[in-house]
Length: 416
Image (tube, rainbow, N blue to C red; front, side):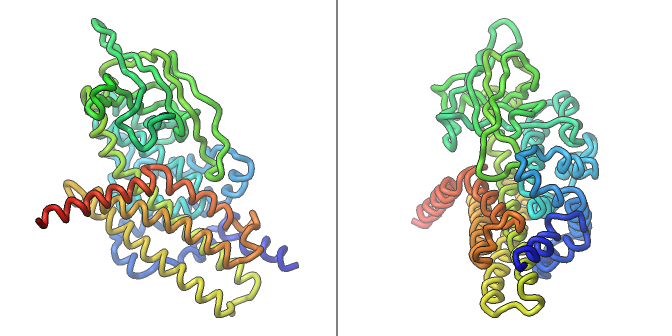
């Protein structure tokens, strides 16, 4: 009977379409210390996003996870509500919001359905380099569709033998000589939305001997001849998002589809990862919050309003950890909004800390619930599975520690 009660009552704020229940439960972690860091627009946006998530995203989360169905409808609800272009100019359908607003939105979406948040952030990751480094013609052609949800985008960087070491990529871009065509050949792996993308931002080298200086970025149409995709991978988590291989066999790409100039792809990557690491960090905080909320709801279903002291003590630890993670996320995103050259080490600290937070809080939540923590109906075990990959993509947390270590070494050298 207890198990039935938990299934009926504890899952409802995250797994039903009750906006008030969803908002009320997650509002318990709307800490004043964080809210004071947000502008009126950012607070309003959070409320608006939360309402869409409660009505159209969270109710689908469990089914998407169990059926491995792409989160098309959930993402479309967000795009149709006008949230698909938070960082982008109004010219292409964006709202010109801050990085803080984007982080807040990502956290809310991840708290409702982490897989949907992965689709959401991948759209931004594909659109951002086109905006920053592409021509107006390229932006006019591709950004409106990505922002309004009528097209899906993907960022094709990782290769089978070149994961974190982007400079060693083997995908080649050879110029046709007298024509204005480059031909791309190679393979990409672990490409989020790679099987569905209508447009791919693909990185290739014009000369492997040049290392980073040879990397060049291209916008590739999804229906280009010679472009094929593998079947989506079977993954531990994020089942509502697809991840696939992409194969390029002499794919023709016009020179005016290059982002920047030959050899400027490394700079495009570095500019893009600032945004992608904000995305992953916000996911970590959102997933942690989802695990906390599901655990609190389950405990309330078991014990009523008076929770046992040991549970309250454990929840206090989680609440403090989530508060620390959110403060770091918001402070770093605000720094990105204002700094001309934000610290890569600080961004690495944020990404590592917040994604570690998502996994640690989720596993702690499962432990607090004991045998109930493994019930799929509660969603905590899904948080554990979804959180794990955030520690790996957008620069593994080991890479983040390496970057922070390098900056520490540099600081010490400057003292001498």
